[in-house]
Image (cartoon, rainbow, N blue to C red; front, side):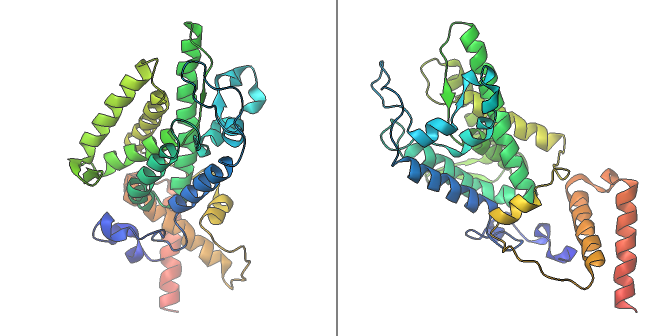
Length: 306
């Protein structure tokens, strides 16, 4: 892919948003995440509720799959369940609970309509890393606050849902496209930065309310993670997830022989460095990265003028 093919050479992010496909070809990571969440939710609807109804409200408890994947405050005494810091972000309240279908519906619609611009800006691989880490960070934020509540006389709690990670994605959208107009329910229009302020205000209220069923702490942790990521210009290129990203993007598991693997590898490294320049400026390059660009430039000239 040449530099003229890169996403930031196109006119506007609206023109880049195709249904289910990113600029790099293959299925969008967001679409795959939605498919996974909906599939797990659908399967969970056919499992049994675990435990008795809530004595105060009469509401039915979580079903078996979401109960198994849920993040609980007892993870401190059961550290072998650390994996739930990730799985809770793919579980949602199912039919038969008070939230019903609306829990997953709101999360996935928000992710689809606002997240695609973020995925396009970050790239598939970086977006996947950001999203998965946002699940963990928002879960840790929720866990810390609820452990403090238990110390103050509160009750053990559990959490499910992608809303913490979705809040992080919305946060990145707000920071990158603050003036973009957003229409809530297709009617109420407002700039993205106003939506961000409203979200933070509502989540602060929910986190302070003992009667709220919304995990405002997770939302705030996700939004804070997005702010740190954006303003400190973080990137997670050092985390190797190419195999996972290839699977989620729907790429076939084929091995194709290439006559010039060394040049292809150099070309990919140069593409990543050019992306870094776009996001963080030329001054962010290391000496090794500058030499890589020079080497790639020489190779291209040699091919053009053998």
